Length: 72
Image (cartoon, rainbow, N blue to C red; front, side):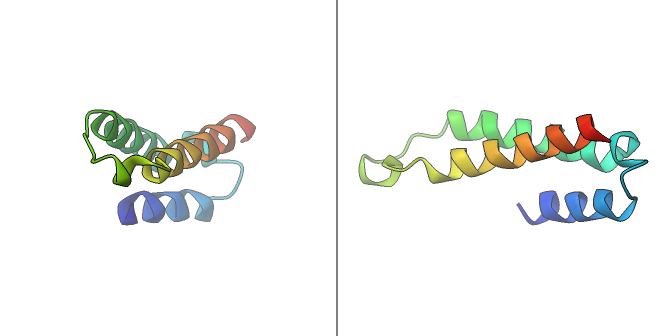
């Protein structure tokens, strides 16, 4: 997640004109997709998976990046 946040911050520094063109957004989306796929394959104990917080967090980050890329 730290790398994803760093890439997102880097993309913000370019400003709205270049956000959709930045490699950092594409890289972050690729990393998020990998993390989401890995999380889907992770088996947790019953108590650990109640809120599914990690998956929801990853999906929310992905939505933010897609919206940013589309609005630039």
